[in-house]
Image 1: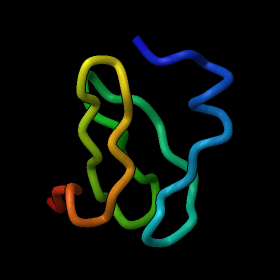
Image 2: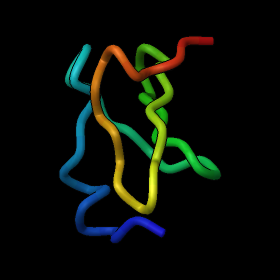
Image 3: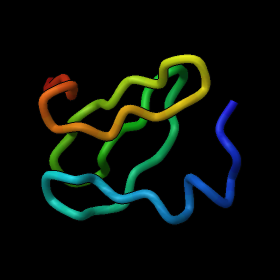
Image 4: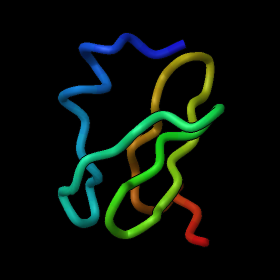
Amino acid sequence: MIDAELLAILACPACKSDVQLQEDRIVCMQCGREYPVKDGIPVMLVDEAETE
């Protein structure tokens, strides 16, 4: 779905921590925000994120 090289350079826009792909979302490992992936494109906007 998302290229591994792209995923390696992405960071959470809110806290600047590492993220990882979990199913159809990109999840921040520190703050827990979940960013959607729409049509194969990560939407890394804080306003679009869901929190647990």
